[in-house]
Image 1 (cartoon, helix red, strand yellow):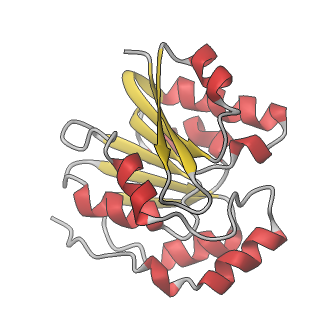
Image 2 (spheres, rainbow, N blue to C red):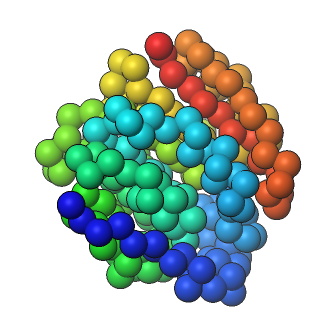
Length: 196
């Protein structure tokens, strides 16, 4: 059993996060990393006891990644996909569990990435991607990839800073619940979506 160690994402300074925000503000959704309060609301929807493959899209500095790893079962795999070069390099340096796969790539290539790792489907996809910042074509492409890769009873968890995605998610999933995370800057909405 791989030893579970914290990612220590605080080592990635706020300065670095802010630099990436101004450099790539279409791809980085917030000026500061997510709070532990938002992380708690996101993680409570992950089926840690039953999931065999969990995917995290757009982890940034690894705030959620660290907390997921602490709760991850030894026989469950976590696939972390990050496109930003700086964030990816920081995450890759801290990889310390055999069942954690840090991938430098695009969420739109989720199916290909899972296949290359030897996985057919994901039981849960956790996303921090700022979807509302993306062009419509990219948004649609990512969500199609997510739908294609989720198991029939799989869960998609996404946070956004507005309710703009509500209609879109309801058109894709049978069940969509929304929670408000007030203790975050800015405050966020957590979407939990499934077809079961």
